[in-house]
Image (cartoon, one colour):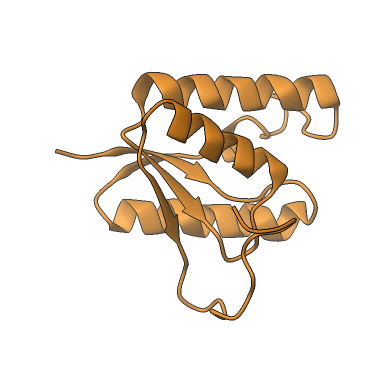
Length: 121
């Protein structure tokens, strides 16, 4: 059975680098035989939602969390670029909903990079 996986990775901040990283995370999940969903890549496409507008950002986060609650078998947290407040919310919700949470790193990122921005989980 193929697992439906909610991807948690940074988006805000260095949007260009974080978007490229999120794409690598989706590719990694696919390579594991999973069916990933990265709402932050989908909902921030031009013409959908503007992540810099707080109300639109909240809509996107809410939609992603609802998708995960309804469908995801697993939440995969990619930690190489840190854990943001938005990611923390996704982790909290996954745990509250009884969904397994796994932390992952991609090849090519130094293992010494601390991954808990703002403190450990």
